Amino acid sequence: MRFIEATTRVGIIYNVSLSNSANISMNGTSNQCLCTMLFSSNGTTLSFNYNSTSQKCTFFTNYSSAITYQMQVDPTSTFYFLQLPSSNSSSLATTTVTASTMKTTATEAVSTAVISSLATTTVTASTMKTTTAHALSTAVTSTHQTYVTTGKSTIVTSIFWAFNSDYKDVYNVYNGATTNGATFSSSVGITGYGSALSVPRTSSAYVSVFSPTLSLVNQSFTVAAWIYPTSTMYANDFPILVQCVTGADEKCFQALLRYGVPVLTFYYDDCNGVANFTANKWAHVAFVYDLSAKQQRIYVNGYLDSAHNSSGPYTGLGTSGLFIGGTTQLNMYYDGLIDELSVDTRVKSASEILDIATLVLYYSFDSNTITTDSGPNRINGTSVNATSTSSGRVNSAISFQGNSSYFQANGLVLFGTSDLPYSFSLWINPGSVTNGILLFAWKNASWCLPVLGFTSAGHLYTTSKTSHNSTLLNSSLIIPTNVWTHVAHTYAPSTGIRLYINGTLSASSSAFNFSSTSSPISIALANCVNTTLCSCSTVPITMTPYNGLIDEFRFYSRVLSATDVSSLANP
Image 1 (cartoon, one colour):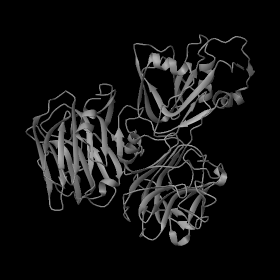
Image 2: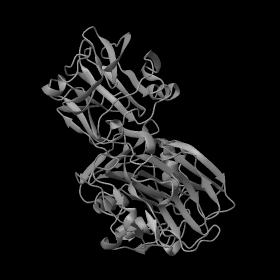
Image 3: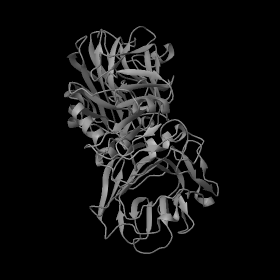
Image 4: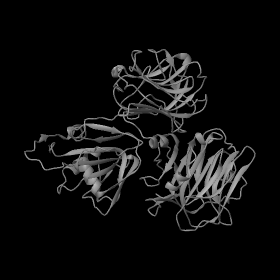
């Protein structure tokens, strides 16, 4: 087998698939599919999706300018594509490659960039040809780690520690080791499944990452985590991530809480936050250093908390390892839980960080499986007697027909927090509007909330919960049948509920305090799941199954603005 290294490079993007109809499909391993693409007889096979579950690849040949292609997040898929030369070359050198070295040659003979945090990206055929004809210089990003081959020398690295009962980077590269009893929480982590890292301060516990080492020296980076401190923070430093050998100016990187306030410091070059963190409460924090702007930034729960123009970048010893939750060098230790810790050697945008911190669920119903969560938390749902349809508002949708059809998601930790702002957004296409529950939430038989549904008169009702009773909100509009309508429900203590129909405010309540229950909460679309739950609340919503389509369901742990809602209503 011969591989023309000077003219052929293969790009790989993990956890995504390219949508629109592929031309050819085959069963086999990823290497077999790769060889088929590289050595296709007509030379027009340019890319393919490989599904690791079905062990099937679908090939794309010449891209059509009449088709719009979309890159979708899909944890079961890997997208392979040819990077074609921008100009013809003469005197091409060739390299002999055996089957055993094909993977190395095809994927590692070129420099590799690791890109993170992907919003769905739409590309036309002309864009796709440009992308594959030249090394990728702009990021197609994903909330999961994504590798893209590139001709540039800059390497962007992403690390993600989920702390689901192990200290491993989820990509099995930057794996940690525990010291002095850093363990895992007995309760679920922020995602409602798995666990979180438990770091007891009294034990001087921490996790260290040495092999391989990641240097944060002289470069941009973003460090983000969910944290749950469990003791008073007003007399101690609580380190989240540290790389430090000596306490000298610009040579000691620390992302930490100091007296309950977030701080990003390189040692005497500090970005001091403003927000005060509360013990025994989950919160998201992100620390950003922008090398080109020479600026440090701190985000709390998705919003910019503080920014500082630094005198220079971190210039310490990059081979000294990373320390999570504590360090003997500085004799300081965190106390509490840490979850979903990530490090990216690039600047994440404000919108990326906002979504990571507040987009709890996002079901596009476009993936190979309709249960896939395309948001940052990977909270996949469960579909019961529901099917996928191509007649969606945006690509595909989920179809509910019959009394036992519904979609369920579990583990909503933040929705179990009273007074926390939240928002739901979805597209509906009802077969009937005279009855039916659209969105139902519950903890158990004693706490339930019919969030959204129809009355027997065909009005759309939305509800929330106070400590004494339910707050009801009725839209005067009659939702049309067999037509797509966008619906958004937002809540904040200061504004109460707001109900938007097709991007326009339809009804609003007065301010009130939302009364939730202990975490985590479950939700269901199109059904109240069982007889007991269906009778746990008395509201005007008819607690019968919804029949129709739903698309683009999102749940946020923040109140969406009118501008946000308008954007979602006009995709």
